[in-house]
Length: 472
Image (cartoon, rainbow, N blue to C red):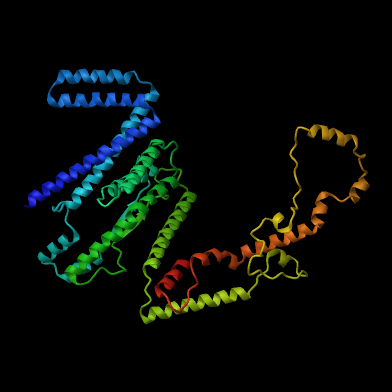
């Protein structure tokens, strides 16, 4: 009965694999027909038929027919120009890549449905050690003292660009989503549209790096592996180790235990590379710190969303209330304290203007809309009659004033500076600048997304504590 069930599951899996291959091949064919034309599609089909027929004949032992087909294929390829050969190579390369994505998905599906253990798990290993005479305490202490260091290198061994890798991963996810049995026809059509969009984007993207990567670029690619794979895979593996350890010893893996550590040569390997300088090492270190902080902030935000409980221990509740009281006291001090800007510190005799606590009513309007006119000079665009007007203006123009008269004549800039509209506009701009530079202005948007914590009804101590961690 089990063998029959496994055969049925395997048949369904192979049928799904063939469906995925057929779907991706048809979508790629539609994209190529739109991008390169129907005539080139006929050429690709002819080359594919000749190649497949030659392979089939050679496998069947018909050598004469296989050689004839191979000669026709070579003749067809020799007639192509360089542009046609490049397009042909790209088309078959993308076809093989899409088939590889479908095959990987088929292997994962087959591995999840099969009952045969391909590799031994931590549970199996620990069980074997305990059955072999290892005591639980000895097993626990040995696992806690285990240290494995993974060193990341910056050698560009990955030939595919990261942008193409992301697109391939998205296509695999779309295939998984398309295999769901509860999809409506509309949802399935949207999945097909997304697949067409990704395949089109892949075809229109250059596959090769046209510039030699710098050490910082190589480090960025290595850190991408940490973000995409190791950041999720290592905690998941340690969780399995902890569960298996608790099952066989009664104690989980301590939170302070770090059996897996990471090292990096990225940005610091000076083994014959003159481009790795002290500045490169510093830049890579800053980049690594920035990525680590960004990943931790994402996890803290995820925990804040998850830990919405209001019940906690007395110690944690006391700590959360202290954080709220300190935040309220700091906000109160910010409202009472009004620092002076640089211009006010340079002019001690000038009365310091108070720091605004809110924007003016017309702050959302431009300056000319707030005061009815603009203080900027109007620029008239020259039209077809501009030359005639210029000539008439030269005829009736007054003689050039003397130097003394020109000094007494107010200029346009003087008139603008003395106008009340410009003075009021300057005050408005100064208020806007003060508000933007103040602590109130900087925290305005943050308060919109993160409400002010309070110890009243709905108090979430875990979120308060994690918010303090995020601020630090």
